[in-house]
Image 1 (cartoon, rainbow, N blue to C red):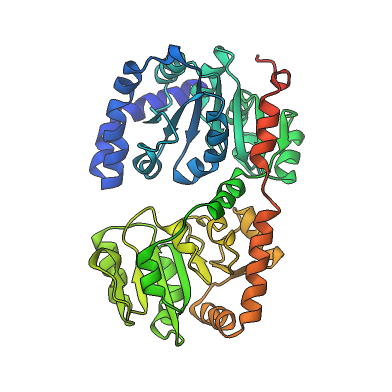
Image 2 (tube, rainbow, N blue to C red):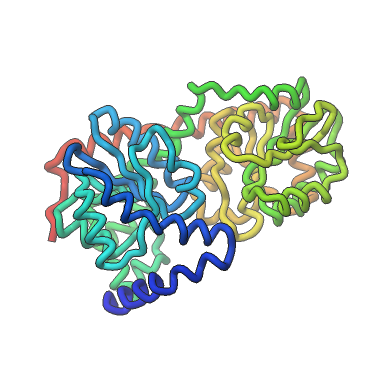
Length: 413
């Protein structure tokens, strides 16, 4: 099976340049990788101790940040690799890290070159990133490999009768830091004792936002003294749920929409559906508008600090629920679509009383009206959101305490 895996990856690498014609995002995916090995060849990794963090995208990078911040204090240099453009393009110049690269395709040659060149003291792969050849190359040099904030389910391919190759990849991990008891039980039931419950480092990350300056003057100008509903990381299928309510918004209520994908066509499509008076950030703020569309990146977390109610996109269709913890930490009610099964934090927050599932325009309207008209109910749901986040912080400390104790590292074989 590994032979087939390597043949397919090599074939993929050979055909890789053709992907850039599919879309602008895929062009970044291809073009960004052209300079990876050139950049690596120019860095002298021998002068410092390096840590390697690999993140699929921006969300996983945010999970890694609390660990990176703490480990930087110990004079490590940090290399971060990304699989997707959405992570790399936003964080490639971050002052927190020393170098960012696109992860080369998982061929034997690529993996051996990167690992031997960097020779990191430790490697951290965030959440769901499992790459056979990179894991093998790390094992060959006896470099500890940690999975951070992972979750596992019984129905994943690793644990199926036909998933022996995928399961063998897991065997190369030094230790799994999982989010919950169920993940630990699934691993242990399949022969993995090198696992412990740390929780999710995202809670530490969003909690730190409370100590930051979240002021945005243009949001202050727009919101004024109105109740504010922020709709974050929205997709077109989300719009079918909330557009009617926006177009018939209650008095003294404003809406801020931050679409997940920002391009001229997407913004134009959204504005044509809205009949309420609307401003688009790049065109200037109209303080008399009822709706503000954020057509720029990097603002959403701070925008949530102005919200009285938040809707988080991705769970109406199959694109995947976006980060509900970013608004929850500010102590506000959270609304999401119905497809939350693969997102345990959403299920847990709903049980905790801080999240409301809306699956139709009618349910969305009812939920919004209930929260707007009943301030006591709105406060109660918001308090539940904040308490939920506060009760989950601490994963970073657990992970650091473990990895600093070198005797815990599993023998390689």
